[in-house]
Image 1 (cartoon, chains in turn orange, red):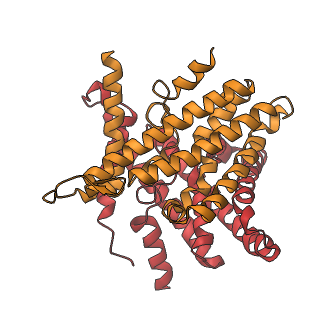
Image 2 (image 1 turned 45 degrees about the vertical axis):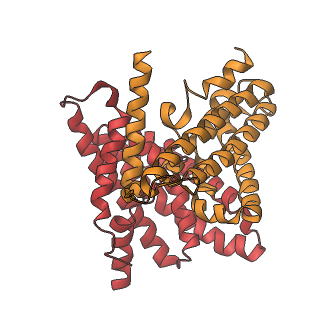
Length: 196
Length: 192
């Protein structure tokens, strides 16, 4: 399989939160605004690409029986790097994302890609796979965050875009809105795919 | 005593770990198709969450804090959880085969259930003492089980309902979870 194909599969065919239904917790929790979704997506992408590279490099060294534990250590190390960097340079975003930054460790997308892809492939395809999946995840979170922000708050990336007469659906910013919104997007994606 | 009661009500209903805090959603949708798997998962979660929170609490306050290694929290906690799940699995297989048969297949899944790590981190962030930690983690896990069983009860009925084809499966599961979450919003304000 070509490198380009590994990259693009994460963007539509296997886009993580919508198609594979993995990594739902951050998808639901942090997407109250497009900006938060983008931040979470980029943090996850960084961890995903780095862990894919390292797992791919070490794939011949790691014994099969302890591979999951080894992958988790690799992932957790990069998560700590992200956590400390965000605390130092992006403190407001760090406050908003809160507990979901350490929880990147248990985001099943990252462990899933390490196990399903990086542990069986060389470095270059692993980078492509990680970048594609990461960007797909980032776009999905930004999209969901954008929808919830527009309808729930009348803004997009913090800029007011709805008129003054707009009554925001504040329920969209709460938990039920997150679940229903994601459910409707999944249904819409099934519908679009079935028409092709 | 009333403090403990408030803590329990808050963790089970007001801040339900699944429907309000959004922790542990992947297995939530994965195992909520059949009641027997849902109850098995719920019991396994209660078991592991309480044990993991107790051990990580001890490690945080007696190892990481005195040594000034707080920044290793994430790595230490996830390793403890992964090791604990392995040990519990081996112990149950050897000593309590009956329990192993009902919980066994769910245990490996639990390592990546963010509810476990989430509760462990929340306990530290909220600065609970040991007793409050035990109550909070137990009540949170019970809240998880409650939400899981509620959703499964609804989803089992989907088998006999006429559902638009594109919404079958996870899509409608999420919308149902949203409606249950709407019900749980009614508890907001009961406990401050």
